[in-house]
Amino acid sequence: MKQTSPATIPDAVIIEKIENGEKQRFELLIRKYNQRLYRLGMSILADPADTEDAMQTAYIHAYEGLAQLETPSFFGTWLTRIMLNQCLAQKRKGNYHLPITNNNINMTTPANELLNKELSQILENAIAQLPEKYRLVFVLREIEAMSVRETSDTLSIQEVNVKVRLNRAKAMLRQNLHGYMKDSVYSFHLSKCDRIVHYVMHHLGIADA
Image (tube, rainbow, N blue to C red; front, side, top):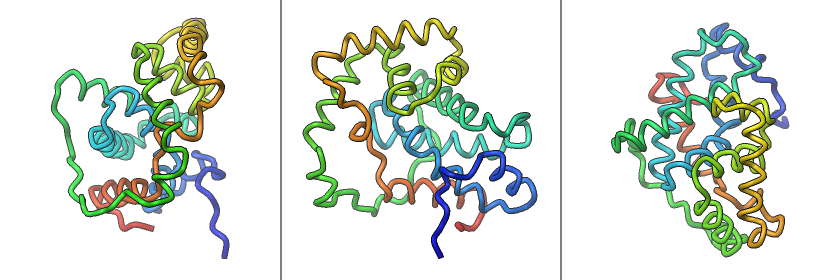
């Protein structure tokens, strides 16, 4: 039977099932938001391992605070804000929590190496050169396609500032990017996704679905 993609299921529906005892459904939320959190984390921490540490911590905090979320449909923005705060805290303190214990997964495959490797590196390097306040807005708006309102809420800045920062970020990148800005940047491959799911679900004492 064909499985339903987590992206097609409303967050509120998933959260309702979790609150009704189907705790393993939290895996759907992890898989749904892994790519967003990874891109956000890389735009701040610039290190895959540190970013995955932050993701694990953010998911655990989100699960533990799920009952406090008044509007389940805002889960994505709320989770992104948790991730942002975690990344900024790690960057300030220079210490990291919940280290990844499974280092045996080989992330390198011929397909991943050949698929737009050079372009991806060019894009990531160009984005990394942006000042952080512009880089965050660019990643959330242009790569993750979050709305102006969601980005404003996540970063705690006014909507007009979101627009101004995005325009400045684009101006800085325009000469090198030429419109190639989405699919190759900070790609979060399935093996990484599985690792995050396994770690978080194990830490929470929930069997993987």
